Picture (tube, helix red, strand yellow):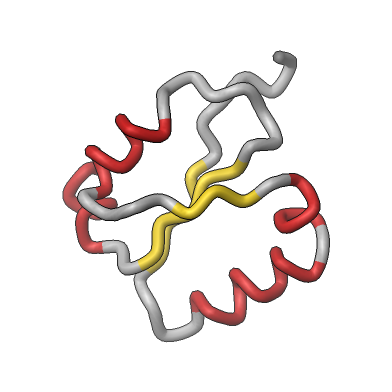
Amino acid sequence: MTQRLGRCEDPTTTTTTPPLISRALQENLCGNAVTVAGREIVEGEGGDQILREATGADIAFLVVGHPFG
């Protein structure tokens, strides 16, 4: 998994669930800065933009958290 994350051009993480691992650890795993996307971005027009930008690119969308937290 970390090898695939390391190849990603634009890793993005969500803040819609409480994180189980820190953003610093996510960035360490990815080897790149991680963009933080809030609920407005993920569930609104920003989510569509993330998908459009993913066409032809190697991206990661990290959802690391507890869904009931």
